[in-house]
Length: 145
Image 1 (cartoon, rainbow, N blue to C red):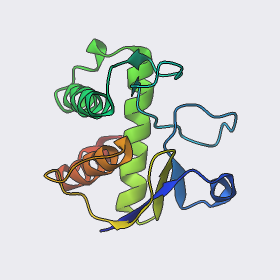
Image 2: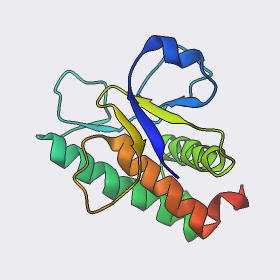
Image 3: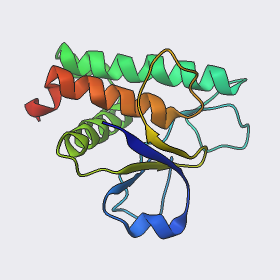
């Protein structure tokens, strides 16, 4: 199922079928699924890396780590903020499965009708996040929560 990946536009924040995937927001209703890795030195990311490609590769590895901890019942190995993030990912996967999401919004790119393909170059963490949600839904893992 394709989804739109949208560049940030504050007017879209009020749309219930658009999920904000940035790092921080003053709006408590936004679930906040930002990449904790950034190549920008003045970022509010948890980890600063050298390049965008490193940021995306680190995000993919880290996201898999927290999903693996969930799959193997090793949640005690995660930090509290990682548990919060994991719960947000599981919630997003459930919304996607229920066809309640038309778009993921971040600050990076616009791609209409995006279809996840792990072999294509990634330009934004939302592409990786969406792929993880698709995978989780195929595995039926979000049904645990």
